[in-house]
Length: 118
Image (spheres, one colour):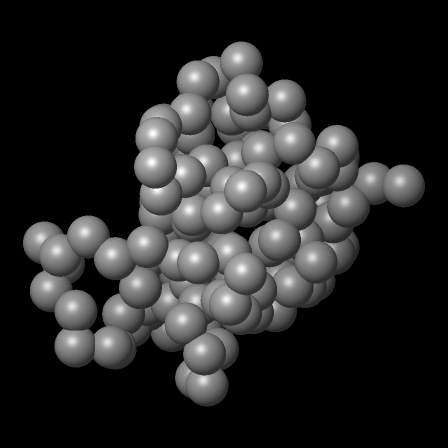
């Protein structure tokens, strides 16, 4: 779970849906984290202050999987999305924040299939 001031998770308490002003369908609640000797049963949080926002970053904690080309995330609305390795880090970060005001748009022509709308 991404944990931080502007993320779905907080270390000391939960969130209410009213706090997710970017919309629950645009906010990552949980994500895969593979290849780091962590059991799938072990809860391990992503610290949004220190994590990488690149999918499958080999050098830092990041959303990652053993699937070729990307990783799966669970959104706050309960849906599951595929995020590809070429999704720009600024879009991943926008998907992690609950209240950044970013507008995330699905776009088949954008790298990773999503972009931020100006």
